[in-house]
Image (tube, rainbow, N blue to C red; front, top):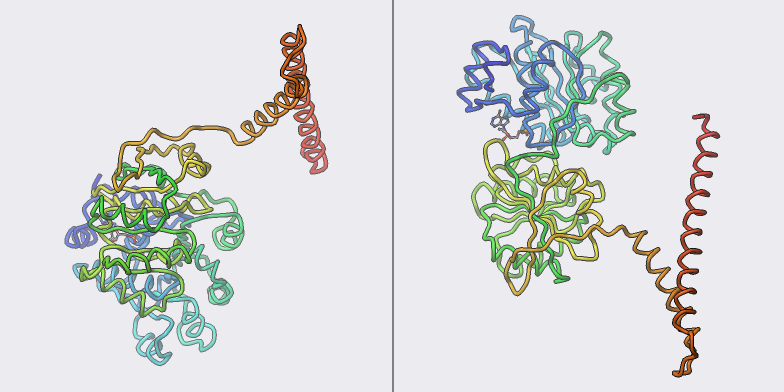
Amino acid sequence: MSFKGLNLSADMLNSLNKAKYFNPSPIQLRVIPKALKGETLLVQSATGSGKTLCYLVPILESIDPNLKEVQALIIAPTRELASQIFSFSNELLENYEKPVKVRLIKAGEELANSISGLKDGTQILIATPGRLHDVIVKNDILSLRSVKTVVFDEADMLLKEGYFELIDPVIDVIDHKVQYLVFSATLENNCLSVLSKYVGTNIEITNEDILTSDNVTHYLIDIKYIDKKEAVRQFIDIKNPYLLMVFASKKETANEIYAYLKENKYKVGLLTGDLSARERKNIMKMLINEQIYILVCSDMASRGLDIKDVSDVLSVDLPSNIEFYYHRAGRTGRFDKLGNSYVFYNSDSTKKPLELISHGTIFKYLVLKDNKLLEGKGIEKTHPTKKKKDEELDNKIKRTTSMLKGKNKKVKPGYKKKIREEVKDIKRKHRRELIKKEIRKQRVERYKREARGDE
Ligand code: AMP
């Protein structure tokens, strides 16, 4: 389906076309029609899903060109993201005939710069929270009386950084009903409860099925307990990727891998939360100029950055919030491009890979051995508690049989039968114990339910 089916103005269609956006992404298909109707929406989506157009298109369409006041407010947690949104809107406006004035105000610039010319007909305001608070609440420079739409971009990050303390007084200034368009990579309960203040509690979450991007092939690589950084090095030599993002859950691991690759003269950059805005910008520049083609990242540090043409993603471990795996994998295979997402594992740590499999992710299996990537066998689904219980039973049997045998090698007649009976007895007792345990567990659960008043 093309953008033509979305009931957009000829002006917008032409502008999208000229900017080479021909077909909407799945999330755009779901969000744009509802947002055009003025609905408040809570959207679960990550950078790379096409979320920016989800709100820029309806906002631009709804702007009244004759009203020279702020009609839409877009709030983003970082300067980089705010700047990206600003460039994106300029890209669209380049061929848009309706005149729309967009302004960016962000942390780090002089307040005087943010203020200058702001009142001269700004219609869309893109801002980071602190600077927005300075302008609207502290200095009362700009009126928000004509705002129709408020966007929270990367709402989970806004929340994590405590930015709602700054945003809330700004929203309080608006004394009429507005449309909220809220985008968040994750929507955990604490996030939902804060957001409900704006979007209400009775709101459906719009999301694209992030679990299934057909363009990405997923691989599990058994690294056979090789040191992870060495495994990364071997992987790079074997695959020779065009542009690789290497993810580690801990920044220490990311640092180590980065240092090791750098030491071995690979063209590599590092993206962790410790970097300053300038350093991050520098990394992006190096990527664009092809001075580096490997980027070692931590999950949060890479959020909100739009890195194009990532051919391969490698997770050296899996994140504790398994959903982030899909955001990692989503860095590649965007739109019509194909991509690969690789995950390292060892045969004694299959819990998280199995979790991904139970979410419906289909993996191909590889083994890293002797500097080669070979076809793998797949992972066994052994239930850890079942394994433990079976071990317990085996130990009991072993103990009893060795006791019956005694130290004496000569055995009494009928000894085999006696052992058979003993083993049978042990198994029966073991089974009974398990059943009793289960009954106790169920009883405790029932008490808890009763105490909560569920029954
Ligand atoms: P976003 O998730 O908004 O950060 O967008 C990620 C990337 O996808 C950006 O580089 C956009 O230029 C690109 N993009 C967004 N929507 C489309 C589309 N409909 N067709 C092609 N590329 C798109």
